[in-house]
Length: 597
Image (cartoon, rainbow, N blue to C red; front, side, top):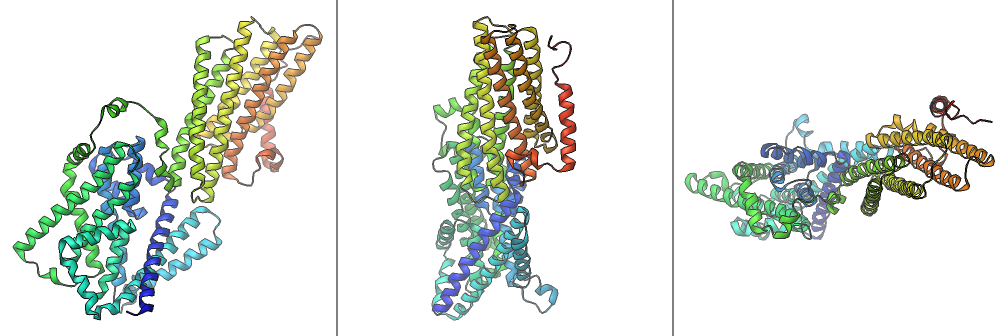
């Protein structure tokens, strides 16, 4: 091999690894965190967990990514170690799909249809479709699909380039002599483990082995130890991910290591025993890409079948390696809900956004609850209830701090346009929920001051504030339900009510000034009423913000601060109909509340 052949080999390897990275990233983005959510939920039995792990890994094309995700699940308390074991086993099976795809490069036939199965024949078509999607697509899903198609095409082109570059080495005795030394089992396992540990992908290292197999220097006997070593080497990624994690996460990484090491030992022992008894003739035959894929699959399926009945044993072995201490036993019952904001999830933004969203929905519920409770203090003041509102408002502040910090880190990742918009919506939403909590605290303090000073509104003022408060509770409930259920239709009903609440605010103040002039109200009570009205009106503003965020998710051309002026003629008619209905529902001109002139 001359210098140009060596450069072709390096270039092919670079394209191969890059293609695998791009394809895996596209698959992950296209899943949008759904696969990780499935992993989290559907692990009720070891067999289901194995099938699930195999399916998810086959889709995202990386057992390392699946295992790192599991480390994050266990670290955050989403999943127990016992649930993760089956998925780890299945992930090893799922990762063999890549080697079967790569084995298609070895297809040789004069038949047109069979030749079309060869990646070098159909990958240019995929690349063409991918580039058309990339340049012309507006939706994120088509762009993600383009990454998958282009990544696969680059992956296969790199594989072909590597294979073509090493083919001449088949006639170089020195090179083939080096490869034949891998027939030593210990050396083969060591080389396979080191290669995979460096590139942190068993699929990629098996692909490189398949590319080198075109030299004809590898035999079935020599690749078996290398493949076992590759499965051990892939554990490095999970072990590195577990550094700095809690003990549960470290145990998950050790289960992955033990599974592959024990599986390798048992498989090699069974292989050696059978070889000693039957003396298989094919062991010394040259192995091709398809043969390597078959060995890779057989090894992982065998290890899973053998060790699946012993999942409890693997769990105990992990606990023996990292025993529970007194502190862990005491804290095992504690529920730190912020653990789900694990930094490992940042690598899969779609899932990380879902984790944030689940906490923001809880935040939404708390903000509605304390606002309703604070408004209730004007009807019947309770010191115990006031203290509870203070505590809940502190919790809201904690939610905002934790989620905001995590979203800031998430925003620095490689996000799609849709993911970036989701992060922006969540950042704005947590601020609105926290501000609603602040207004609840303000109302609680006003109610406490009224109780302390024995202040009470007149019947007319009380009635007006009841109507005003009912409208605020309505808009709060609508905006929270729209956010939690992602209900754009419900969100559209918020802004007309906000307009009515603005009018209510003006009317309440106007009527108060009339009473003040007639001497029917004191200045102190007037100031209190004004403070309450300000807080009510601000809460409605935050509810309006939340609703507009939801609408923007469906139509990113909507401007938050000019929403009403952007309404189409058809939407405006509907808007005005809803506004009129709200005006009738929350009018202050009833007999009970009418002003006597």
